Image 1 (cartoon, rainbow, N blue to C red):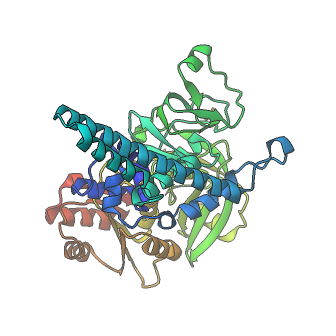
Image 2 (image 1 turned 180 degrees about the vertical axis):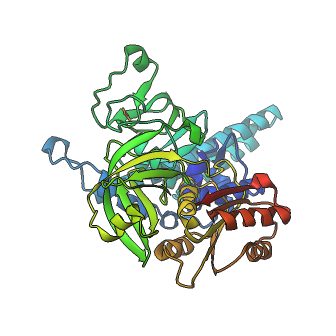
Image 3 (image 1 turned 30 degrees about the vertical axis):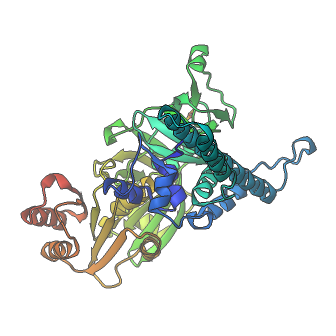
Length: 482
Ligand code: FES
């Protein structure tokens, strides 16, 4: 019996990104069987994986913090969280040993059959059988493969995986979060509206696996829908690994136009003439958008501006925008810079724009931001990280002055935490400089997809220069900010 795990689970077990695992599969180092990986192959590729290295401990701590039941009812009281986790681990180890023995016994039966067909019999056969039996009984309590199977069992208990068809996208549901919340966190665009069981727009069909309701809902599913396996993803969580049939928005045109009354939560001064504006939507009305898109903001004084969203669509409730101080008659910026608008209401309309990530592409991505073009690029990069499809990415960011690279903490965090991310800060670089740098840095500049954003004239010049250097127009996406 070959123990197979999905790509997402295999990446978690090995403690690597899904993109890294896919790279090794493409290079032929690891085989897949119908989209799954054998534990034995995984162990061969990552011989030193262990529970400690997979980041599961931190994961468990997080899950423990917000997911375990809080009931104090004596009849339903659970052992302490630590005891539960220890018991789960112990069960996982016992299961792994049983699985290893079952696998060895299966192999023994196959071999016995072959020997019988070959006419092997009598004392020699009995002697061979006894020796093999002794081998199975003396299987070590825990070897590398058994440990991986135990870890897999442990992970399955702590989080369930959800696969969406027909897209094939996969994500994990941790603790008691809803399937919808986990999907949004993973950067997927399942349909939804209220997130609280009223509208029915998050309806999806359970094809296999088990889900359980975690919140009551007013929306009524018909008897026929229930029989067909439909449920609301905002009110259910996954008990086991689940396959769901659900529609996903694939293009910007699939997303509905939204009009949300949100609130200004915070204003951070990034530079003398630049603010990072934090806007929070109501819990029941988050903004659905694609990374790289824009939204129109209207302040209480009636001033409005369309701005690129500088945050990840995996959190449509907390939106960020960079606001540059404009002319003296720019009422929008003046209100934010000089007023005290925190907690004021702000109208958010959108999304707009088609500068979005090629999500299915696995090629490396090169992001080039010119000045405030970093806003949509930041959104694209955060989304690329959350969907974990891109093999490697490189950010070039050119600004006017040496202290012009704001978002410093963000850049530093990416560099420190991602092996496949490179960041080149530049000052006053022109199109020709940028193209020369890309050609010097990349082994094959024709291979990546290029995402450019910034003021329209330099962005156009850069796109032209890249094409003149032999990069196909289809590999270049550009957002020209006014
Ligand atoms: S999102 Fe409205 S019912 Fe689930």
